[in-house]
Length: 295
Image (cartoon, rainbow, N blue to C red; front, side, top):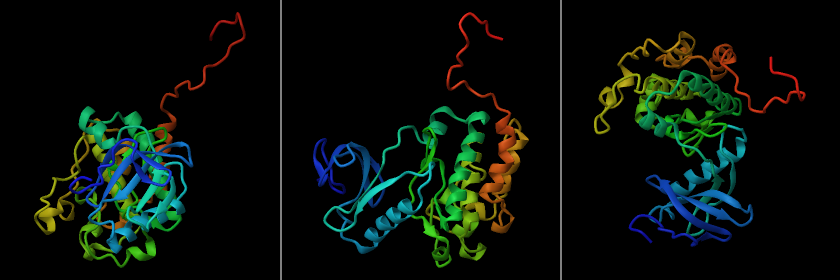
């Protein structure tokens, strides 16, 4: 066992029928392993609480809450949860293994995303957020690091997702500083709602097409507007080469007041016409009668 992690070696058992393959990463309270699930007979992701917090009731509630959210929210753009074991020495959940780089990795390595790629991506994310809103959930951590660029892309990590009716009781900063809506940073800016996720969507797509945040990055050790520039810093314009059809809905997502932001469905509806005009790749080769020349 490592100093702060389980340190499972390849082939070592995590739980009955669940064998470690390799460490994928982790956060302050958990490790994520690529694992082999004997029941599913497939590769999965095992998200396991670290030893130091495995017995902490609050940590167990958080990972149980993530399993609850994923099981309740079955959608093509959200990962599937195949089970959870909250009791015992190694509380964990079993998640779908998604292949593909994270959007944050693409931005870091390649710079700005092509507009032809960013617009369909935005619509896919809108699809997931619209569904979550319809089911009464808020993600609260929409950001490039939580977008896996597969086919389709997936919005991952529902570890702090909350039901709308419970979110109103959250009066402390929650989320990732640079992607938090004003109401996440400061409870006086309004209650958390589905509009909170629309802000995260706006920052995510903005960063994808601009290669930077829409405001300066804050100081994590500070407080107020020094930690959260989005509280009083105006949103900087997108680069001039970003098409208006994409720039307008992205900037609209970043309205300071939640009630002034469009819904995820509104954003998708505004992006569908320009996306419909994009060239369509031939996914399935067209079969021509023998001897007939192409047109």
